[in-house]
Image 1 (tube, one colour):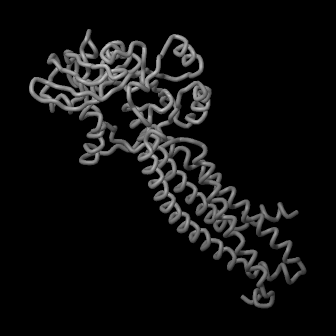
Image 2 (cartoon, one colour):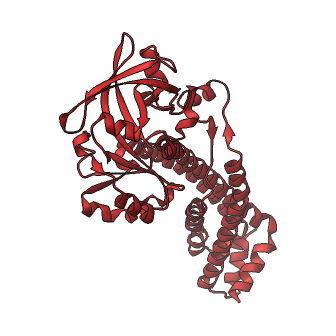
Image 3 (cartoon, rainbow, N blue to C red):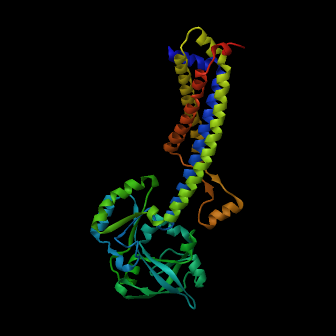
Length: 401
């Protein structure tokens, strides 16, 4: 009987019910769109940043990240390659890295010399697409970052000299042609990095068959923990497995700060929404004072009326939340497939760092369920007001028009 009364009461005054549901739905819509934009933007930034160079996960010899020297390299033999190919279902590329002195005809500058597998590397970091002149690894030619090439006055076809220390303190020196010039969005990379073929770098460093890292790229960053767990067995074999969060703690701190700011903003939104819903509930309660007085006058217990009011509040909150989630889905879907594009100075600022000037959204159900649940709880808490008002109801006063 209570359920029947609840349903009839809701639609006995359609205007009041629809206004309350609209308040809840609008709150859910705003919360979900805001959260989807925030998570989508960070997802885009993280995938772009790790795609520059670091990848999502790296495998090193134990202790390499604390002391990044060639003596902490390891042999990437056929057995390890087969094990990695069997254990992981993602793109990976081996690298050998060392800091060296690079020289042109007259000037010198420090740089990071990186030996890579050309085909694997371009699948992971799209190195081939970053070329602004020259070609992608021809014979003994190297790929030089644009900033370093400008400082050393180098162009495609010129010669670059590399001088440094090899494996186990051997001398490492070589003279190579510049095959191509590449532009990187990261200023740090663009100012001082040189790519060479893996076997070429191993010969330069006198480190045959050795690498300093194996870098992995994931299709979906949300699967990072599961992927890292799949590599956990390598930690017992003398290797370390580091995620991008461990390699770039500054970026994690920035994300944490941004997320904290987002929750302050969304908290203000929730507060505004709560007052909006509360105002609607107060209006609904005041309009029904005579009804409550009449019901108590004819002998209906207040506990039964309270159950009826709680059922109405619960049903309105649930219906409003579901409507808000349904309305937000096409909005978020459209913003995911057609991200907001920046123009003018903002677009140029994004492009200078190698980012596409867009503000993407992210379509994941956790955003819908999480924000919908928060607004639902707010609506239910506010729905307690009619119950409190009912306990203070004076039947005689309520029957006065």
